[in-house]
Length: 467
Image (tube, rainbow, N blue to C red; front, side, top):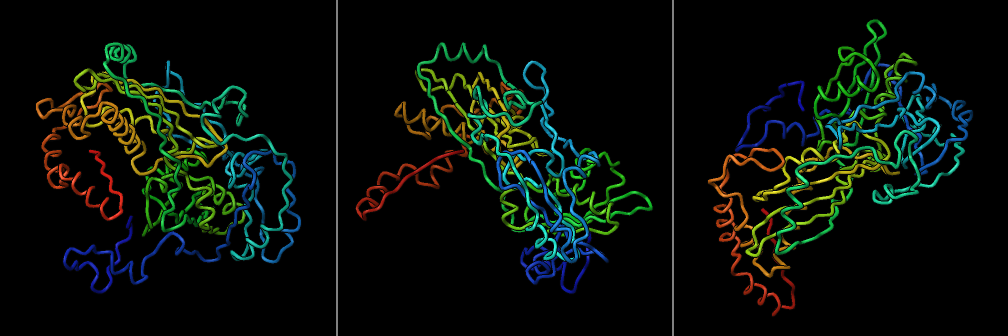
């Protein structure tokens, strides 16, 4: 994002297709979230849980408050007093039988309990970043450990530790797509059924630029100014407004450069709202810059899907139907970016193939892990992975060429615009033509010879295909 356009000498004269911002960035003249400063600013440091699930029995801040330069320590009590307790979320599509997602409370500083390692418990504000960190290390927390559950399937099992009283069985959301009866009929007449369980593993986005946020409060008109790393003002402003009940026009954002997005930047993180509490209470701007460790622990993770898949085929290898059972791990809370990989997987469920009958169920459990948000396609790569793994497995079981099985089942050019069984409409694509070109360029048919040559040199060689 580049909301300010400053012209420096030679900037804007792109040579040989170079991007106009490159010279400014590679010569250190960029302005990222941590580069913003305000007159008289203070510095924040978050005290974080090292327990996955525990009651906070006591919080002793006396020694920290006596440290030179320390202005205040904010806790969950301040978050509750401000009313910053209920984050918005994106799981707003209708659930099974018209149900809605169960979204637990999440005070912007933990209150009463912690539910994942890294959850912010207190915010120390001091005259320098070093003073805030030193004081934070003197805060003593007494915990009472609770049983935790980190595997999403285990979280849904009977007798699993419960994370939230208002989310029974840890099941925050359940949904379905497609037509179960049509899929049952397709499977009943199938000559072959391929079954496969896959995992789209939990990932940490880890962008080059860690999160950072500077919040200034203007008492004259009750507004907040943010210099924060983000992917777009509109969504972040709406989310922070929903979290804090502040009108959107009282939230002002200013940014210039962003070191990587990936969906992880979209979210109204609780830290930003906690900084609002501090800036208002102390009457000074407050700045926080995340460490790399904090980023791994608290930036919304991606993926975290477990999928049981079944693909039904007739005697000639034509696809008849597909059934998927998704478990979408949401982590300890529904983050503002928690799409659950449901909408996009439904939209793209048929992949590039004509699969006449589709049905999927989705369950989104809460676990004692970092909350999950949108990340790089938010479900699109996941569904592509599931479908292509099923097709490869079917080819192996049927002893068919993996490319031929795909060619046989592509949506043919004359079927476009193609309406999928889950309600999407695909624009035209020459899938058989693309495959033919790719097989030629990759010398697909010459693989056996290349493998022999590799074996003669004592090396292994493999081949894979995925549209």
